[in-house]
Length: 632
Ligand code: COA
Ligand code: AMP
Image (cartoon, rainbow, N blue to C red):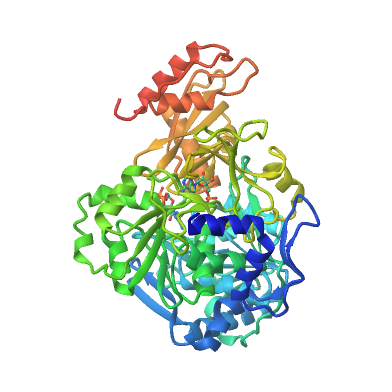
C-alpha cells in the first residue's frame, strides 16, 4: 500500500484520531470535547466544545512566534501600478484597528458584515477583522449587479457593509458605490453603516449619517483584541448559485475550517511556512477565501493578492512577472486563465523573459481542465500541473494529487484521487454504486470532513433537500463523472443547471428568470455552450408573445442588458436568439441537453419522449444564424 492509500484509509477509518491530530496545528483557547460530533444526523459538526479565534490563528500567533517581520500579504496591482507588502506585524496592526472601527459601529460577535470590494488589501483586512470580532462576513463578488447584492443583504441582514468607491477592470474604472447605493435602496433590510474605501481614481458620494470614510474610521479606531468563538460558530457566509435565482448561503464554521485548511497547505499543496503562495482568484469566490486569505496565513506563508488579469495587465507575461518578482513557489488559478494566456502567447515567449527558478507547482481548479491546456502549461512551465476538484460548499479540495503525502502519476483529464477525509463514490439514480469506469452521480459518503459547509444560512431544511436527500447517506455534489480502476476521479459535467463561465459558477435558471420578465418574452431557455476561452458561455433562446412585431435584434439587446443589470457583467450573457418554439418532452420539459448538444455540434439522439421532433431542426437553424456550432 502506498503512502497516499495509507493516509486516506486512516482518515476514513479513524476520523477522530486523524482530525484530532491535525487540530494540534491550530491554537485553541479551549480544546474540543468531541472531534466528530454526529449527534444530530444527517448534520455533522466538528470540534464541538472547542473555542478559538480564526484571526488569532492567521495573524497574532505568527507575530508571537517569530514571523512578525515576514511578509504576510503582498498586494500586487498592475492596474494601479502598486506593490505593497504587509508584514505579519503590520497586517495584525491594521486588522486590529479595522476590527476596532467595526466595533465602534456596533458590530460584535455573530453580527453579519457584507464586504463588496475589488481586489484591494482592505478586502482581506475586512474579512480578518470580522473574524477577529467573531462577526460573520459575507463577501459579494464585485462583478455582481445591485440586484444580486440586494438579495444577499436581505438574506444575511448585515449590521454594516464594507465597500469601495470603485474597482478597476484592466483600464476601466468601475464605480462600485452607485451599485451599493442601489442595492440598499432595493433591499428591505438596511445596514446601519457603510465603511467606504475612497480610491483616488473615483471618489464616492457619501450618504450622511450612514457612510463613513474607511481610512478616517480606521485611523481613529483603537485596536481590538481577538474575541474567542465556538469552533462551530459561523466564520462566514458565501453565497453561490443555486438552481434557482435564490442563491445559497454557504456557511463555514471556525474550527473545522481552520483545521482542514491548515492541513491542506502541506499535505495537498506541499508548501512550507515562510514560502510565497499565490492563488490568482478573487476574494469574492471560495478560492479567494480559502487560498488567498485563510490557508496561507494559517500556515505562515506570504500570500499574494493580485489586482489584475492574466492578460492585458499589461500583457500575457503578467503571471510570470508576479511569480518571479515575489519568488512564488506555488500558484493556483483556473484553466481559463491559462487558455487566455495561451491565446495571446502560444509559444510562451513571455515566460522566457522571467526567472521562475523558485516556482515548483501549478494547481488548477474551478472548472474541468482540458488535457490540452494541462499539456501546454506543463510544456511551457516545466513544473507539475495539478488539476484538483472542489466546490464552494466543500471549501477545500475533494480530489487532488496530494503532493505532500505522495506524488501520484498525473492522468490528464482527472483531478487524481479522493483527498483524505473524502469518501468519494459514483452512484446511479437509486444510490447504488456503479462499476468502475461507468459515469454516474458523484457523491461523498457521510460524515463529511471538517471544512465542509455544515449548513446553509438560516436554511437547514434547504441544505438537507439540496444535498442529502436524493442519495441517502451521501452528499450530492451535483457533478457527474466516473472513477477508474486506479481510483482516479473524472469530473465531467454538472447534473443541474449550473454552468461554469471562466471559472465562475452561474445558474442558467437565474438567467431564465430574468429573460422571462421581458414583456415580449413568452417562454425562454438558457443553456451553456462550449467556449474555447471561458469553457462555457450562456446562450438564450426566446419565444416571443403572439403579435410582437418589433425587431428581434432590439429585443435580444434588451434581454442582454437586463441580465447585465440584474445579475451582473460576470454572467457574460451576450448571445440570444429568437425561436418559434422550444423543444419539449410530451410532459412539457424543455430539452436543454439536446439543445446544448446541437449547439456544440455533438452527435445526439432525438429523445423518445420528444413532443415534436421538427422543433430540433428549427433550433439548429436558429443556432446556425448566430454561428453555432463553432467551426461548422
Ligand atoms: N468587478 C466588476 N466587473 C467585473 C469584475 C469585478 N470584480 N470581474 C469581472 N467583471 C466584468 C468584466 O469586466 C467583464 O465585463 P464586460 O462584459 O464589460 O467585458 C465581465 O465581468 C466578464 O468578466 P470575465 O468573465 O472575467 O471576462 P474577461 O473577458 O474580463 O476575462 C479571463 C476573461 C479568462 C481573463 C478572466 O475571466 C479570468 O482571469 N478568469 C480567471 C477566473 C478565476 O480566477 N476564477 C476563480 C476560480 S479559481
Ligand atoms: P464553485 O462552487 O464555484 O467552486 O464551482 C464548483 C464546480 O466547478 C464543481 O461542482 C464542478 O462542476 C466545477 N469544478 C471545479 N473544479 C473542477 C475540476 N478540477 N474539474 C472539473 N470540474 C470542476
